Image (cartoon, rainbow, N blue to C red; front, side, top):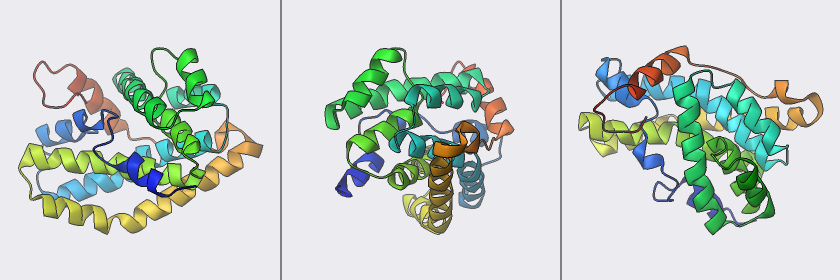
Length: 224
């Protein structure tokens, strides 16, 4: 195992399409819920402990060898908003392209064939982590960090924030990323004996609502 592979998966320059998505922060800025570094930190914290925990659990389970098609169905059930399901599959297609080129594996090829319209992004991320020789906990870290790193970066552009403040925000949330990643990996381990219900299913209804609203905008800076 090379931990450098984890750095590659979480690098914002990894060509998986995440730079085009705001993770809901564009809508939050428009509604005034996010307007400065303090409110952005609150937004990221809430996202980390809800959708972040859920996606980290799915990624960890995929990296641990759980059936990716069953996990993809579980991801659908945990993503009630149609617009956000479409986003997750679009990101999955883009992640799949990058992962197949970077960490080729039979598991990725099989999932690509079974889900030609795209599997949910955390499932693909977990398989990529496994192909890179990483552990389920590593996949959970990648998913948890990405879940708030993307919105923090997007908010810098949307609000003209100081990038140093955004980096400081992510550093302050680092202990909570640790907790979420560990909880997700533990849940993925339990899922091997207890089934899919052991995986996190934390939700954020406001993100679901604003995600649907954002998808209907005629003018927007980010895809989601």
